[in-house]
Amino acid sequence: MLIGFLPMAAAFQVMEHSTQLAAEKDFEGLKASLKGIAAKSGGHIDQTTIEAVNTILDSVNTTLMDALEQDRSHTQNILNIARDGVLRCDTNRDAWFGTGGTFEILNSDVTADGATHSSCRGEEATEFANMTSHCDTVDRQVAQWNICEMPGDFTAGDTDAINTYVCCLTTFFDNNRGTYYTHRQNCIDATNVHSAKRAECNGAQGAFEAEFCGRETAVQNNCEIYRNCRTNEETNWLKVTQETQAIEEIFQAQRVALECLLCYGTKILNNETDLSSCEVAINCASLSWCPTIVYDDITDFTGCSEPVGDDNIPCAAGFVATWYQAWSNEGSSDFRVCDEHHGGGRPTANGPENWGVPSTNGNTIAPSPVDDCTACSSTAHNTEQGQVSTPTAPTF
Image 1: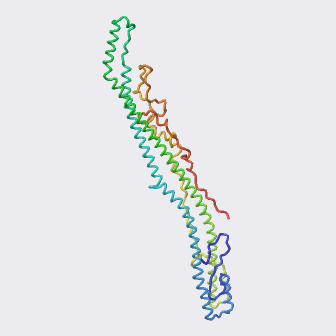
Image 2: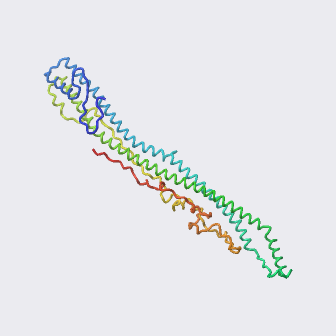
Image 3: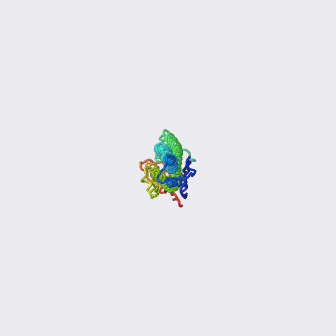
């Protein structure tokens, strides 16, 4: 390029030009050449002089104007690249959070794991009800047993008391042996099935919580990446914009200077010797072409609005209410304590004392999912929402 890309603090750019008719190669040289021609001609120029002036004018209109446009275009491109850097931050963010992006995939995974856990807890509720029914049956049977009173003394041989006791035992076994072992085994089997289902659901719960926490951590990380990207790229864009504005003023001053040369040449060709009117200041915008830079604005910063909020991540109150309340420990009056049983009876398999939040759908689970809830690490906490990019304005 004949006119180089200038730093902001540069002085007026020297425009180099090589001509067959003048040894001078810069603007001042061309200006001096034209003024010298005008002075020597005395208002009467010959054909050789006309050709020399036309050559200079052609050079100004082509080579120098083209060089100035190349520098303007180069400067515009640098500004556009700086702006594109800002827009690229937005593009990357939109790709991550948009349709088909990582955020959508993570949401699908969280939803799927949540559905798996919820379905499992529903199956656990069914198995809990089945266990409750079978074990309550055997408890009620035991509670209704007629306890045979033992005779005081067997040494006296067969007595009425012994006979009554034996008859009582016979009746007891006749009344219970046909059902008790079945009822007892049903309770044991149902308890084992429920225990296995509970372990399965606890595993599904852990996977769900981990998936949920992982998504929130990824959201915070990508919001931070975007914010840092915008901060860096906006800082660069502001610096380049300020430099470009200063350079644009230089380009326009150069364009006005070239117009002065054209004015000199035109007057010389018109046999005029007074060139002073060519040096009257003019506005570049009034010319047929003035090197102008287009300053497109950047997009607004997009805040991190995707977080669910710290009250809604695993183990927090909002999360528990949304995902676990339906499966909470609400005591069942049908599952009774067998106080009549020797040793104080078997306690209920669930109890509202474990968790004070009532079930929203009547399903009861033992133990409550919240007992084994695994909280997220601090990386999942909502630290990016409300933060914005903080570019540094240039100082020169």
